[in-house]
Length: 321
Ligand SMILES: [Zn+2]
Image 1: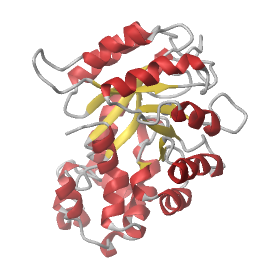
Image 2: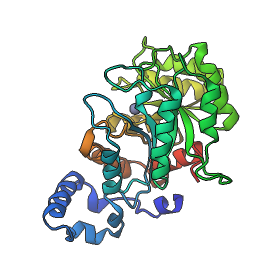
Image 3: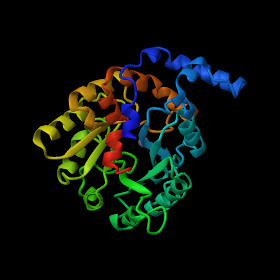
Image 4: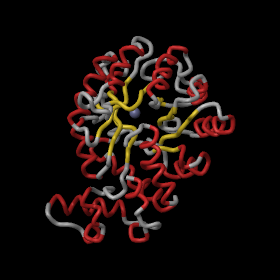
């Protein structure tokens, strides 16, 4: 996969300003003339695999399950993946969130059993992140999911990390209740992804940093780099962890503005930022919301930096090879 990313032209002069328009044109053309390609598509053979198909993108933040008011239907996710040619999405089952009336509020075993079935049915494009519920679950039952391979005797794992949502499951990110889960991550060599949110909340980046410092070998990814910002708090803890070498923290791009992603890459390095989108938060046109981001990152970052953010960091941390 890395070779394919580094084969990309260093600059994208021919696609600099046309991407959103191109997507709309392609959509209209494909609706009315299903076998017709736009001129741009003829000149970009990689687009046979989808709008981003030649970029080998890994989305490290997607969901299955249901959330009232949002279209998280697996069919919506799959059609987005296919249309955009995303190589792989790491999904967790949001029905593990303790929000009765909004989610199904499934326990750890139920939520991850459902996830496993869906991931197994789509193993080429999906891997799982185990939804944890530190308040009423336990690391021992979660461990069974970390052991799951697609077939007996095979080494490829169904689940490649743990997901912790301090807001939706109501625990402070630095509470001792997370320690058993992070110890499990260390034992299995897998990352933990945390929803990160405003200072003062359960998902305060400082609290995530405090938990990560107790488990410095575990890669900990701050989803959203603070949900809808401002992002300083998340950037600050990643910078501090690098300076002090006391935790292994990363930022993620879901719902972050393109300008803030570029600032984050400059501030903490391209090896500390992962592309994730919270699929399919934006519903049927989910990835369309990220077209400008992908296009601009491709233009403003070096091919190496772009490859790190879009795929290589995820491949390395979640051991996707
Ligand atoms: Zn999410």
